[in-house]
Amino acid sequence: MSRISRRASAGLTALAALSLLAGCAMPVPSPDPQPEAPESMPALDEPRIDRVLEELGEAISAADEEGDAELASDRMANPALRIREAEYALAQATADGDGTYSPRTLITSPQVEIVSAAEDWPRTIMVVTEIAEGANVPLLLTLQQEDPRSPYQLHHWVRLLPGSEMPPTAVPATGSAQVADDASGYLVSPTDAIAQYADVLTEGDGSDFAGSFALEDDEFYGLVQDEAENLDVVDEAGTFSQRTHATDAPVLTMATEDGGYIVVGEMRTRQKFTKTISGSEITVPSPHIEALDSEDGLLEYLDDSLIASFRTMVAMYVPAEDAEDGAVTVLGAERVLTGVSRECPRDEERCA
Image (cartoon, rainbow, N blue to C red; front, side, top):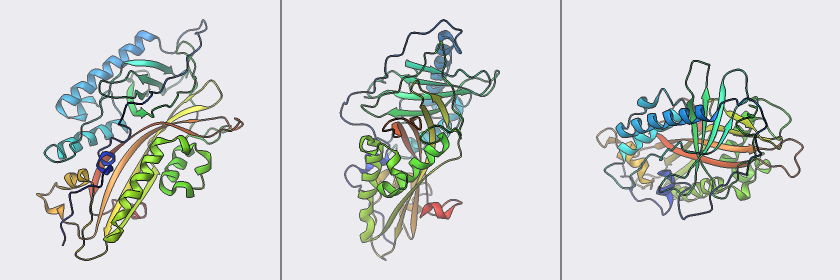
């Protein structure tokens, strides 16, 4: 058996450690100005929104202090809760090694609030936050209330891509419509939008859906493709493959003023490293190695294949079906390493 090299190719550790969108200061996304509110009863008034966000912030702070996602479980739901738990685990696994991982700083101070106009439940809020200290882009948070007696819970957070613009939406006093998961009249339905983008991340320009997305302006897509190309250098010792698919987590949506909608959902990516040449070495990014070191170092040797699993929260703008020159635009994303194993869990097909 050959010991796996702890060296990572330049730039790869940053991706594996989930610094996909960090770097030099760049222009931050700036939501379009919103129109003045008409005289109508608000779906959720500003004091209540502030209270919801304050309580969420307090729960996140308590969980961060202890590194325990369960402390925020009253105010966070999957996929956000599951991904936050993975962040804490990754931080602990890499604490004493190279490429130490720090969980994303989650703030709840709002710049822009988008409130559901639904009369029934569940109800949704989307919030563009202020920029956290040390960061260069704001977050987009999605919260949902399951029923009148339940608190609003955080379902997703994404870092907005530098230079992206949030599409205009109705002011909170009016409220925005929630779009059905299978709604028609748009370039693509909400659930299909997430699934098709996952296929694009897997197949690149060869995807049947590549033409529906504004890939030339999609920094997240570019970074994912660059990472896959760089990791593919393992072909001297073995093979590398990567597949992304949409999970079954519910998507959250909000209509925009131009007839389109914003959708936020979750995807899962599995990277597979397979050694095919005896006595050879495969270089794997160091956070993978640290996460593997969970059985007194027994997994530092790679006999066959290694599976690295990531979960990604992504936000997109989808235009109306009849929009001129319409294309799906990725607004932001957040990707976190959630597990490393020798064998593919459950669905072997999705590991190839």
